[in-house]
Length: 236
Length: 236
Image 1 (tube, each protein chain N blue to C red):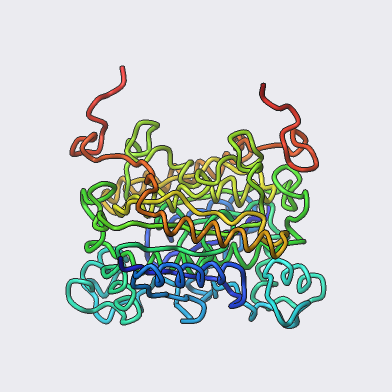
Image 2 (image 1 turned 90 degrees about the vertical axis):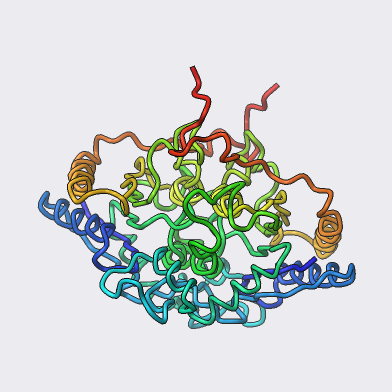
Protein backbone atom coordinates (compact mmCIF):
# COMPACT_ATOMS: atom_id res chain seq x y z
CA UNK A 1 0.00 0.00 0.00
CA UNK A 2 1.18 3.54 -0.75
CA UNK A 3 0.58 5.83 2.21
CA UNK A 4 0.72 9.63 2.30
CA UNK A 5 0.87 11.23 5.74
CA UNK A 6 -0.11 14.90 5.74
CA UNK A 7 1.22 16.22 9.03
CA UNK A 8 0.92 19.61 10.68
CA UNK A 9 2.21 20.64 14.10
CA UNK A 10 4.17 23.79 14.97
CA UNK A 11 6.41 21.87 17.42
CA UNK A 12 8.63 19.31 15.72
CA UNK A 13 9.06 17.37 18.99
CA UNK A 14 5.34 17.21 19.77
CA UNK A 15 3.44 14.06 20.64
CA UNK A 16 1.51 14.52 17.39
CA UNK A 17 4.88 14.26 15.64
CA UNK A 18 5.56 11.04 17.56
CA UNK A 19 2.31 9.72 16.12
CA UNK A 20 3.56 10.59 12.64
CA UNK A 21 6.82 8.76 13.36
CA UNK A 22 4.97 5.75 14.78
CA UNK A 23 2.91 5.59 11.58
CA UNK A 24 6.00 5.83 9.35
CA UNK A 25 7.80 3.09 11.31
CA UNK A 26 4.83 0.75 11.64
CA UNK A 27 3.66 1.02 8.05
CA UNK A 28 7.19 0.78 6.62
CA UNK A 29 7.95 -2.27 8.75
CA UNK A 30 4.84 -3.92 7.33
CA UNK A 31 6.11 -3.36 3.80
CA UNK A 32 4.06 -0.31 2.85
CA UNK A 33 5.55 2.68 1.02
CA UNK A 34 5.23 5.87 3.05
CA UNK A 35 5.68 9.52 2.13
CA UNK A 36 5.21 12.46 4.50
CA UNK A 37 4.10 16.02 3.75
CA UNK A 38 5.24 17.84 6.90
CA UNK A 39 3.48 21.14 6.27
CA UNK A 40 5.30 23.27 8.86
CA UNK A 41 8.66 21.87 7.83
CA UNK A 42 7.78 22.54 4.16
CA UNK A 43 6.63 26.07 5.03
CA UNK A 44 3.52 25.16 3.05
CA UNK A 45 1.50 28.12 1.76
CA UNK A 46 -2.14 27.67 2.88
CA UNK A 47 -3.65 30.70 1.15
CA UNK A 48 -5.72 29.95 -1.97
CA UNK A 49 -5.19 32.86 -4.35
CA UNK A 50 -4.53 33.95 -7.93
CA UNK A 51 -0.86 33.13 -7.31
CA UNK A 52 -1.78 29.43 -7.55
CA UNK A 53 -2.17 29.73 -11.32
CA UNK A 54 0.60 30.38 -13.85
CA UNK A 55 -2.08 31.33 -16.35
CA UNK A 56 -5.78 32.08 -16.07
CA UNK A 57 -8.95 31.25 -17.98
CA UNK A 58 -10.31 34.61 -16.86
CA UNK A 59 -7.71 37.23 -15.99
CA UNK A 60 -10.31 39.77 -14.87
CA UNK A 61 -12.36 37.89 -12.32
CA UNK A 62 -11.16 35.01 -10.14
CA UNK A 63 -13.46 32.04 -9.62
CA UNK A 64 -11.03 29.83 -7.74
CA UNK A 65 -12.61 26.44 -8.57
CA UNK A 66 -12.88 27.26 -12.29
CA UNK A 67 -9.24 28.35 -12.40
CA UNK A 68 -8.27 25.13 -10.61
CA UNK A 69 -9.92 23.17 -13.42
CA UNK A 70 -8.33 25.24 -16.14
CA UNK A 71 -4.88 25.22 -14.60
CA UNK A 72 -4.92 21.51 -13.79
CA UNK A 73 -5.98 20.68 -17.36
CA UNK A 74 -3.38 22.94 -18.92
CA UNK A 75 -0.36 22.39 -16.68
CA UNK A 76 -0.66 25.82 -15.10
CA UNK A 77 -0.97 24.93 -11.42
CA UNK A 78 1.68 26.20 -9.02
CA UNK A 79 4.45 23.57 -8.63
CA UNK A 80 3.85 23.22 -4.87
CA UNK A 81 0.24 22.19 -5.58
CA UNK A 82 1.23 19.78 -8.35
CA UNK A 83 3.73 18.10 -6.03
CA UNK A 84 0.98 17.39 -3.50
CA UNK A 85 -1.52 16.27 -6.16
CA UNK A 86 1.04 13.75 -7.39
CA UNK A 87 1.30 12.31 -3.87
CA UNK A 88 -2.50 12.07 -3.51
CA UNK A 89 -2.79 10.26 -6.84
CA UNK A 90 0.01 7.89 -5.80
CA UNK A 91 -1.48 7.10 -2.38
CA UNK A 92 -3.86 4.26 -1.52
CA UNK A 93 -4.24 5.69 2.00
CA UNK A 94 -3.98 9.32 3.09
CA UNK A 95 -3.51 10.04 6.80
CA UNK A 96 -4.23 13.51 8.16
CA UNK A 97 -2.25 13.87 11.38
CA UNK A 98 -2.79 17.03 13.43
CA UNK A 99 -3.71 18.58 16.76
CA UNK A 100 -7.33 19.73 16.94
CA UNK A 101 -7.49 23.52 16.67
CA UNK A 102 -11.02 24.83 17.18
CA UNK A 103 -12.58 21.44 16.43
CA UNK A 104 -10.90 21.39 13.02
CA UNK A 105 -7.50 21.40 11.33
CA UNK A 106 -4.79 23.99 11.91
CA UNK A 107 -5.06 26.58 9.11
CA UNK A 108 -1.91 25.33 7.39
CA UNK A 109 -3.64 21.99 6.80
CA UNK A 110 -7.00 23.56 5.89
CA UNK A 111 -5.09 25.42 3.20
CA UNK A 112 -3.60 22.15 1.94
CA UNK A 113 -7.19 20.91 1.51
CA UNK A 114 -8.29 24.17 -0.16
CA UNK A 115 -5.41 24.20 -2.65
CA UNK A 116 -4.63 20.50 -3.33
CA UNK A 117 -8.09 18.93 -3.69
CA UNK A 118 -8.64 20.65 -7.02
CA UNK A 119 -11.98 20.91 -8.73
CA UNK A 120 -12.31 18.89 -11.92
CA UNK A 121 -9.70 16.27 -11.21
CA UNK A 122 -10.98 15.20 -7.79
CA UNK A 123 -14.65 16.25 -7.81
CA UNK A 124 -17.18 18.23 -9.82
CA UNK A 125 -20.62 17.97 -11.36
CA UNK A 126 -22.16 14.80 -9.98
CA UNK A 127 -18.81 13.33 -8.95
CA UNK A 128 -18.89 13.40 -5.16
CA UNK A 129 -19.59 11.06 -2.22
CA UNK A 130 -19.66 7.53 -3.70
CA UNK A 131 -18.94 8.99 -7.14
CA UNK A 132 -16.09 11.22 -5.93
CA UNK A 133 -12.78 11.26 -7.75
CA UNK A 134 -10.87 9.62 -4.89
CA UNK A 135 -13.09 6.55 -4.50
CA UNK A 136 -11.03 3.43 -4.01
CA UNK A 137 -8.62 5.25 -1.68
CA UNK A 138 -8.82 5.28 2.10
CA UNK A 139 -8.46 8.23 4.46
CA UNK A 140 -7.65 8.29 8.17
CA UNK A 141 -7.87 11.34 10.41
CA UNK A 142 -5.51 10.96 13.38
CA UNK A 143 -5.70 13.74 15.93
CA UNK A 144 -4.61 14.83 19.36
CA UNK A 145 -6.58 17.03 21.71
CA UNK A 146 -6.78 18.21 25.29
CA UNK A 147 -10.30 16.99 25.99
CA UNK A 148 -11.39 13.72 27.54
CA UNK A 149 -13.76 11.14 26.02
CA UNK A 150 -16.69 11.86 28.36
CA UNK A 151 -16.84 15.46 27.09
CA UNK A 152 -17.70 14.02 23.67
CA UNK A 153 -20.36 11.52 24.75
CA UNK A 154 -23.82 11.87 23.22
CA UNK A 155 -24.86 13.84 26.33
CA UNK A 156 -21.37 15.29 26.85
CA UNK A 157 -20.69 19.01 26.91
CA UNK A 158 -19.48 19.10 23.29
CA UNK A 159 -21.41 16.16 21.82
CA UNK A 160 -19.68 13.59 19.60
CA UNK A 161 -16.30 14.65 18.19
CA UNK A 162 -17.26 13.08 14.85
CA UNK A 163 -20.11 15.60 14.62
CA UNK A 164 -17.70 18.47 15.27
CA UNK A 165 -15.46 17.04 12.53
CA UNK A 166 -18.34 16.47 10.10
CA UNK A 167 -17.03 19.16 7.72
CA UNK A 168 -13.82 17.15 7.35
CA UNK A 169 -14.93 13.51 7.67
CA UNK A 170 -18.06 13.81 5.55
CA UNK A 171 -17.94 17.22 3.86
CA UNK A 172 -14.36 16.87 2.62
CA UNK A 173 -13.07 13.28 2.69
CA UNK A 174 -16.41 11.51 2.19
CA UNK A 175 -17.38 14.09 -0.45
CA UNK A 176 -14.19 13.31 -2.38
CA UNK A 177 -15.06 9.63 -2.43
CA UNK A 178 -12.52 8.39 0.11
CA UNK A 179 -13.43 5.38 2.21
CA UNK A 180 -13.14 7.19 5.54
CA UNK A 181 -11.91 5.22 8.53
CA UNK A 182 -13.14 6.10 12.03
CA UNK A 183 -10.82 8.83 13.34
CA UNK A 184 -8.00 7.83 15.67
CA UNK A 185 -8.09 10.11 18.70
CA UNK A 186 -5.28 10.78 21.16
CA UNK A 187 -7.23 12.11 24.15
CA UNK A 188 -6.14 14.54 26.87
CA UNK A 189 -2.57 14.58 25.55
CA UNK A 190 -1.19 17.70 27.30
CA UNK A 191 -2.21 16.36 30.71
CA UNK A 192 -1.17 12.69 30.68
CA UNK A 193 1.94 10.75 31.73
CA UNK A 194 4.66 9.40 29.49
CA UNK A 195 3.26 5.92 30.11
CA UNK A 196 -0.20 6.99 29.00
CA UNK A 197 1.30 8.57 25.90
CA UNK A 198 3.18 5.37 25.10
CA UNK A 199 -0.10 3.49 25.42
CA UNK A 200 -1.71 5.80 22.85
CA UNK A 201 1.17 5.13 20.44
CA UNK A 202 0.68 1.35 20.95
CA UNK A 203 -3.02 1.76 20.29
CA UNK A 204 -2.26 3.80 17.17
CA UNK A 205 0.15 1.18 15.83
CA UNK A 206 -2.51 -1.49 16.37
CA UNK A 207 -5.05 0.69 14.56
CA UNK A 208 -2.72 1.10 11.59
CA UNK A 209 -2.07 -2.64 11.40
CA UNK A 210 -5.80 -3.40 11.35
CA UNK A 211 -6.83 -0.81 8.77
CA UNK A 212 -8.12 -3.39 6.32
CA UNK A 213 -10.47 -4.75 8.99
CA UNK A 214 -11.93 -1.42 10.13
CA UNK A 215 -15.46 -0.56 9.08
CA UNK A 216 -15.53 2.69 7.13
CA UNK A 217 -17.95 5.53 7.81
CA UNK A 218 -21.30 5.64 6.01
CA UNK A 219 -22.12 8.56 3.72
CA UNK A 220 -24.87 9.20 1.17
CA UNK A 221 -25.04 7.28 -2.07
CA UNK A 222 -25.84 9.49 -5.05
CA UNK A 223 -27.97 6.67 -6.46
CA UNK A 224 -30.55 7.62 -3.82
CA UNK A 225 -30.91 11.13 -5.29
CA UNK A 226 -32.26 12.35 -8.62
CA UNK A 227 -30.43 14.56 -11.12
CA UNK A 228 -31.36 17.71 -9.13
CA UNK A 229 -30.03 16.01 -5.98
CA UNK A 230 -33.48 15.60 -4.47
CA UNK A 231 -34.11 12.32 -2.63
CA UNK A 232 -35.72 9.79 -4.95
CA UNK A 233 -38.05 8.62 -2.19
CA UNK A 234 -39.71 11.62 -0.63
CA UNK A 235 -40.87 11.16 2.92
CA UNK A 236 -44.65 11.22 3.25
CA UNK B 1 -23.02 49.16 18.19
CA UNK B 2 -19.39 48.51 17.25
CA UNK B 3 -19.16 46.01 14.43
CA UNK B 4 -16.09 44.13 13.20
CA UNK B 5 -16.39 42.45 9.82
CA UNK B 6 -13.77 39.76 9.24
CA UNK B 7 -13.80 39.21 5.48
CA UNK B 8 -11.95 36.73 3.30
CA UNK B 9 -12.29 36.27 -0.45
CA UNK B 10 -9.49 35.98 -3.02
CA UNK B 11 -11.42 38.08 -5.58
CA UNK B 12 -11.90 41.69 -4.49
CA UNK B 13 -14.87 42.11 -6.87
CA UNK B 14 -16.67 38.95 -5.69
CA UNK B 15 -20.29 38.81 -4.61
CA UNK B 16 -19.05 37.93 -1.12
CA UNK B 17 -17.24 41.28 -1.18
CA UNK B 18 -20.52 42.95 -2.20
CA UNK B 19 -22.05 41.42 0.92
CA UNK B 20 -19.24 42.97 2.96
CA UNK B 21 -19.93 46.34 1.35
CA UNK B 22 -23.67 46.00 1.91
CA UNK B 23 -22.99 45.33 5.60
CA UNK B 24 -20.67 48.33 5.91
CA UNK B 25 -23.18 50.65 4.22
CA UNK B 26 -26.27 49.38 6.02
CA UNK B 27 -24.76 49.31 9.48
CA UNK B 28 -23.02 52.68 9.05
CA UNK B 29 -26.25 54.28 7.80
CA UNK B 30 -27.98 53.02 10.92
CA UNK B 31 -25.39 54.79 13.10
CA UNK B 32 -23.20 51.82 13.99
CA UNK B 33 -19.41 51.99 13.95
CA UNK B 34 -17.91 49.50 11.51
CA UNK B 35 -14.36 48.24 11.00
CA UNK B 36 -13.29 45.66 8.43
CA UNK B 37 -10.45 43.15 8.57
CA UNK B 38 -10.07 42.21 4.89
CA UNK B 39 -7.72 39.28 5.30
CA UNK B 40 -6.59 38.90 1.67
CA UNK B 41 -6.07 42.63 1.33
CA UNK B 42 -4.09 42.62 4.62
CA UNK B 43 -2.04 39.63 3.44
CA UNK B 44 -2.91 38.15 6.82
CA UNK B 45 -0.63 35.35 8.01
CA UNK B 46 -2.79 32.34 8.94
CA UNK B 47 -0.05 30.04 10.24
CA UNK B 48 0.10 29.64 14.03
CA UNK B 49 3.77 29.25 14.94
CA UNK B 50 6.58 30.22 17.28
CA UNK B 51 6.90 33.43 15.25
CA UNK B 52 3.72 34.67 16.95
CA UNK B 53 5.62 35.29 20.18
CA UNK B 54 8.30 37.91 20.79
CA UNK B 55 9.34 35.95 23.87
CA UNK B 56 8.52 32.50 25.19
CA UNK B 57 7.65 30.92 28.54
CA UNK B 58 9.37 27.77 27.28
CA UNK B 59 11.98 28.27 24.58
CA UNK B 60 12.58 24.54 24.16
CA UNK B 61 9.13 23.13 23.54
CA UNK B 62 6.19 24.96 21.97
CA UNK B 63 2.74 24.49 23.49
CA UNK B 64 0.91 27.05 21.40
CA UNK B 65 -1.97 27.78 23.81
CA UNK B 66 0.37 28.19 26.79
CA UNK B 67 2.56 30.60 24.84
CA UNK B 68 -0.56 32.54 23.81
CA UNK B 69 -1.37 33.01 27.49
CA UNK B 70 2.14 34.00 28.40
CA UNK B 71 2.60 36.35 25.48
CA UNK B 72 -0.79 38.01 25.90
CA UNK B 73 -0.14 38.60 29.60
CA UNK B 74 3.33 39.99 29.01
CA UNK B 75 2.86 42.06 25.86
CA UNK B 76 4.80 39.60 23.73
CA UNK B 77 2.22 38.77 21.07
CA UNK B 78 3.02 39.56 17.46
CA UNK B 79 1.67 43.03 16.55
CA UNK B 80 -0.61 41.66 13.81
CA UNK B 81 -2.36 39.48 16.40
CA UNK B 82 -2.64 42.32 18.92
CA UNK B 83 -4.23 44.54 16.28
CA UNK B 84 -6.97 41.96 15.69
CA UNK B 85 -7.47 41.29 19.40
CA UNK B 86 -8.03 45.00 19.94
CA UNK B 87 -10.79 44.96 17.28
CA UNK B 88 -12.46 41.92 18.87
CA UNK B 89 -12.44 43.55 22.30
CA UNK B 90 -13.88 46.75 20.77
CA UNK B 91 -16.66 44.98 18.87
CA UNK B 92 -20.20 44.29 20.08
CA UNK B 93 -20.86 42.24 16.94
CA UNK B 94 -18.34 40.28 14.88
CA UNK B 95 -19.38 39.23 11.35
CA UNK B 96 -17.46 36.45 9.59
CA UNK B 97 -18.03 36.95 5.84
CA UNK B 98 -16.63 34.30 3.50
CA UNK B 99 -17.28 31.80 0.73
CA UNK B 100 -17.71 28.23 1.97
CA UNK B 101 -14.58 26.21 1.19
CA UNK B 102 -14.99 22.54 2.08
CA UNK B 103 -17.92 23.25 4.41
CA UNK B 104 -15.74 25.61 6.46
CA UNK B 105 -13.75 28.84 6.24
CA UNK B 106 -10.98 29.52 3.73
CA UNK B 107 -7.66 28.76 5.44
CA UNK B 108 -6.74 32.45 5.75
CA UNK B 109 -9.77 32.93 8.02
CA UNK B 110 -9.24 29.67 9.91
CA UNK B 111 -5.79 31.02 10.71
CA UNK B 112 -7.30 34.26 11.99
CA UNK B 113 -9.36 32.13 14.40
CA UNK B 114 -6.32 30.03 15.39
CA UNK B 115 -4.10 33.06 16.09
CA UNK B 116 -6.49 35.78 17.33
CA UNK B 117 -8.81 33.91 19.72
CA UNK B 118 -6.02 33.52 22.26
CA UNK B 119 -6.16 31.17 25.20
CA UNK B 120 -6.39 32.86 28.59
CA UNK B 121 -7.92 36.11 27.50
CA UNK B 122 -10.87 34.66 25.56
CA UNK B 123 -11.28 31.15 27.02
CA UNK B 124 -9.62 28.67 29.35
CA UNK B 125 -10.29 26.47 32.34
CA UNK B 126 -14.03 26.49 32.84
CA UNK B 127 -14.55 29.66 30.78
CA UNK B 128 -16.32 28.47 27.65
CA UNK B 129 -19.84 28.27 26.22
CA UNK B 130 -22.02 30.46 28.48
CA UNK B 131 -18.95 31.28 30.60
CA UNK B 132 -16.74 32.08 27.59
CA UNK B 133 -14.68 35.26 27.52
CA UNK B 134 -16.71 36.82 24.70
CA UNK B 135 -20.14 36.50 26.30
CA UNK B 136 -22.19 39.63 25.80
CA UNK B 137 -20.99 39.98 22.21
CA UNK B 138 -22.82 38.73 19.15
CA UNK B 139 -21.44 36.83 16.16
CA UNK B 140 -22.88 36.39 12.69
CA UNK B 141 -21.56 34.00 10.07
CA UNK B 142 -22.47 35.25 6.57
CA UNK B 143 -21.50 32.94 3.76
CA UNK B 144 -21.88 32.27 0.06
CA UNK B 145 -21.92 28.87 -1.57
CA UNK B 146 -22.73 27.10 -4.81
CA UNK B 147 -25.27 24.67 -3.36
CA UNK B 148 -29.04 25.06 -3.20
CA UNK B 149 -31.22 24.89 -0.06
CA UNK B 150 -32.78 21.48 -0.83
CA UNK B 151 -29.33 19.88 -0.73
CA UNK B 152 -29.16 20.89 2.94
CA UNK B 153 -32.61 19.73 4.02
CA UNK B 154 -32.81 17.22 6.84
CA UNK B 155 -33.06 14.46 4.20
CA UNK B 156 -30.93 16.37 1.66
CA UNK B 157 -27.71 14.99 0.23
CA UNK B 158 -25.50 16.95 2.65
CA UNK B 159 -27.84 17.32 5.63
CA UNK B 160 -28.25 20.69 7.39
CA UNK B 161 -25.55 23.27 6.66
CA UNK B 162 -25.55 24.26 10.33
CA UNK B 163 -24.41 20.72 11.17
CA UNK B 164 -21.55 21.00 8.65
CA UNK B 165 -20.63 24.33 10.28
CA UNK B 166 -20.93 22.98 13.82
CA UNK B 167 -17.16 23.31 14.42
CA UNK B 168 -17.49 27.06 13.78
CA UNK B 169 -20.96 27.95 15.07
CA UNK B 170 -20.81 25.87 18.25
CA UNK B 171 -17.20 24.69 18.60
CA UNK B 172 -15.66 28.11 18.05
CA UNK B 173 -18.14 30.99 18.40
CA UNK B 174 -20.48 29.34 20.89
CA UNK B 175 -17.49 27.99 22.82
CA UNK B 176 -16.09 31.51 23.13
CA UNK B 177 -19.34 32.73 24.65
CA UNK B 178 -20.66 34.70 21.69
CA UNK B 179 -24.41 34.94 21.21
CA UNK B 180 -24.42 33.28 17.80
CA UNK B 181 -27.02 34.44 15.30
CA UNK B 182 -28.42 32.00 12.71
CA UNK B 183 -26.01 32.08 9.74
CA UNK B 184 -26.95 34.21 6.75
CA UNK B 185 -26.58 32.09 3.62
CA UNK B 186 -26.23 33.32 0.05
CA UNK B 187 -27.27 30.21 -1.88
CA UNK B 188 -26.22 29.06 -5.37
CA UNK B 189 -24.30 32.29 -5.98
CA UNK B 190 -22.14 31.29 -8.98
CA UNK B 191 -25.21 30.19 -10.95
CA UNK B 192 -27.78 32.94 -10.39
CA UNK B 193 -28.76 36.13 -12.19
CA UNK B 194 -27.86 39.68 -11.24
CA UNK B 195 -31.44 40.16 -10.08
CA UNK B 196 -31.25 37.13 -7.82
CA UNK B 197 -27.98 38.41 -6.40
CA UNK B 198 -29.52 41.81 -5.73
CA UNK B 199 -32.34 40.04 -3.90
CA UNK B 200 -29.80 38.29 -1.66
CA UNK B 201 -28.21 41.64 -0.83
CA UNK B 202 -31.64 43.05 0.06
CA UNK B 203 -32.32 40.06 2.26
CA UNK B 204 -28.91 40.50 3.90
CA UNK B 205 -29.56 44.18 4.62
CA UNK B 206 -32.89 43.27 6.20
CA UNK B 207 -31.15 40.60 8.28
CA UNK B 208 -28.59 43.11 9.54
CA UNK B 209 -31.30 45.63 10.46
CA UNK B 210 -33.17 43.02 12.49
CA UNK B 211 -30.22 41.59 14.39
CA UNK B 212 -31.60 42.59 17.77
CA UNK B 213 -34.78 40.62 17.06
CA UNK B 214 -33.15 37.40 15.87
CA UNK B 215 -33.18 34.41 18.16
CA UNK B 216 -29.66 33.22 18.90
CA UNK B 217 -28.53 29.60 18.67
CA UNK B 218 -28.74 27.34 21.72
CA UNK B 219 -25.58 25.85 23.18
CA UNK B 220 -24.80 24.02 26.44
CA UNK B 221 -24.88 25.80 29.77
CA UNK B 222 -21.95 24.86 32.00
CA UNK B 223 -24.30 25.00 34.98
CA UNK B 224 -25.69 21.68 33.76
CA UNK B 225 -22.28 20.01 34.14
CA UNK B 226 -20.17 19.23 37.19
CA UNK B 227 -16.55 20.27 37.77
CA UNK B 228 -15.30 17.34 35.67
CA UNK B 229 -17.70 18.38 32.89
CA UNK B 230 -19.95 15.39 33.39
CA UNK B 231 -23.71 16.04 33.10
CA UNK B 232 -25.18 16.72 36.55
CA UNK B 233 -28.27 14.67 35.72
CA UNK B 234 -27.17 11.34 34.36
CA UNK B 235 -29.65 9.62 32.13
CA UNK B 236 -30.99 6.38 33.65
